[in-house]
Length: 139
Image 1 (tube, rainbow, N blue to C red):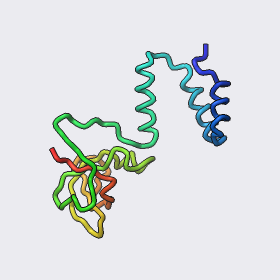
Image 2: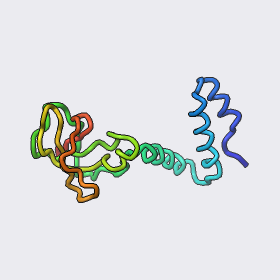
Image 3: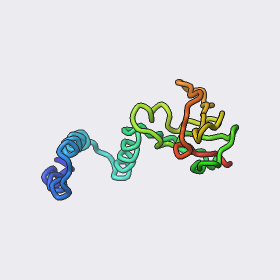
Image 4: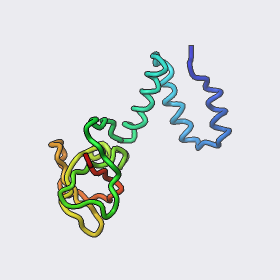
C-alpha cells in the first residue's frame, strides 16, 4: 500500500505552477521514498539529513563547549579560529569545505585567507573566503 498519493502530489504541483523538471525529480524521489517504513520522527530526521547532504552541507554538530558566531567584515584578525559555515557552499565544493575549522592566516582586500587545521584532505591552505562564509569561534 502506497503512503504517497501521487494524484494529490501532482495537483499540488499544478496549483503552484511547479516547473516540470522539478516535479519530475520530486516524483522520482517519492518513488524511492514510498517503500521506506519507519516511525514518523525518524522519517522527519531522514528528510532533514538528506536535504543537507544532498546539497553538500555539513551536518556535524558543534560540541556544547564551543560557541561560534557569524563572522562579520572587519571583525576578524590574523590568528582567529574560524570555520567554514556548514552551508557556505553546495555540491562538491560544499562536501570538501563546509564545516571545516581553521585559522585566519591573512586578510587582503576584504578576503579572509584561511588555513584548515583539521588534518583532513584536501588541506585548505591559503583559501580565500568572504567573511559571510565563515563563523568565528568565541568560546
